Each structure stands twice: as C-alpha cells, then as structure tokens.
Image (cartoon, rainbow, N blue to C red; front, side, top):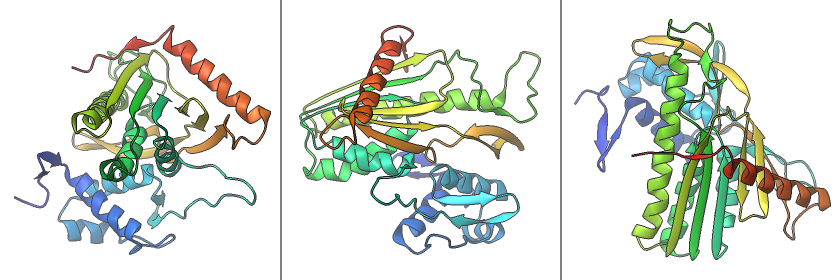
Length: 300
C-alpha cells in the first residue's frame, strides 16, 4: 500500500489527511510541539508522510478547525496558545476545549440531558469521545443519557459555507453547500451510533438520542447541559481552501471547534440572577424550535 492510500484500522478507513492530522495532534497533546512552536513546513510534512501537498493542507485545516493550530496567509503553521481565563472569572474558551470539560462534568449527574443546536454534531461527538475512558472505567456512571440535537435541514439553502466567488452552476448548486450537508449527515449518524453504543456496551442502562432539523442557517451554537447550564458561541466566517475533486477552491466557512463558548449557569455556581435567567431563556428558545419547526432527521 502506498503512503497516499487510505489505510484501514480496526475496521475503519482512515483517509491520508486524517492520518497526518492524527500524528500531528498526538505531538501537540504530548507536548512534543508546544504552544507557539512552528510546525514542520508543508514541504517537510509532505516528504515525512509521503503524501501530496493538498493532503498536508487538509490535515492542517483539520487542526486549525480544532483550535490546535494557527495559520495565516504566507505564514508557517504554529501551535495555538491555550486561552487564559481573566482574573476572577472563567473566560470563554474554544468549543473543542470547553465542551470536553463541561460534558465530562455533566456526566457526573445520575440523569444526563444534552440539548444542542449547531451546524453539525461534530464537537459534541468529540466531547463524548473524550469522556469514554471515564465511562468505560466506571468513574462516570450515569443511569441515563438523553440527547436532543437540532441541525440545519438537508433542504436548507445555507448562507454558509459557500464558494468565495459565489459562482455556482446554472442549477444553483454550490459544492461548499453540498460538502456541508454531507458533514451534517455524517456526524449526526456518528453521534447517534455513539450514544446507542453506551447502552449496547452496558455502560449506561438507559439512553435516547433524537436528532431533528430546522430550515435555517445556525449563526451560533448552543449547548444546554442538564437543564442548568448553557454554553453559547457565535460562528465566525473565515476564508480557507478545500479540495473539490482535483481542484482547490476558496470558501467562506466556520470552524466549530474554534468557536469560543460563553458559559452561564442557573445552578449553585451562577454568577447572578441574570446568569440564571439566560439559561432559562435559552431552554425556552430551544424548546420553541423543537416543538414547532423541527422535523425528524431520517438517517437510514
């Protein structure tokens, strides 16, 4: 098998871009590559992993989306510095970091509820994956886990992502939109299977997962944990390159892992009445969409 070929590990196919991203991710998380450090050049990575330059760029794009790497036009990729909370308060942190901590804390409850509104279910899936070792060992042992997710509908003409030029074919299709809808379905299916696995493996006695869609473009992401905590963040559009077929195309897109989340609580750790009121209002907002515009997402 050539280095460029997709590998198969544990029954799962691993595209070359993910293989490269996984290797660099391990170096960052192990401390081999520290915050602020430059990554090897794209040319060096190309030679090290035996892949094309486009694969290296895609791998770096994955790490950028997760908030692990910072890239700029013409500037070498560097390891992102962790966000530092301000004195006396917990500051906003990237979703790919904060949600891991807060989902893990939510799973200490006996009955866990996770309500989510977002562009895809990717960040939630990642957070649950990070908690799996503790669930498997029994250090986190909820009696039930209930997940509800609101995603953009497959029919929605999303405002983003889209090709920078804005040019589509005569039928009005945009490859960036098609790619986005594919990711929505992919991670919705992955999340559903992940939650069901908690029950099937005997880790959580009772689970439920309900995924619905609404015909709108999410401009923010919202996580409601156990009905007492909200995490909200606003998608920011950036321009970056992706590969469609054999062609690299510039698109406007958002990186959900990098979106900074602001936390509010209605529990004992709430800052004030306004903090608690924001959580309550966010719950009402979610329920209003869930019970009116939302429709079941058919995944099979």
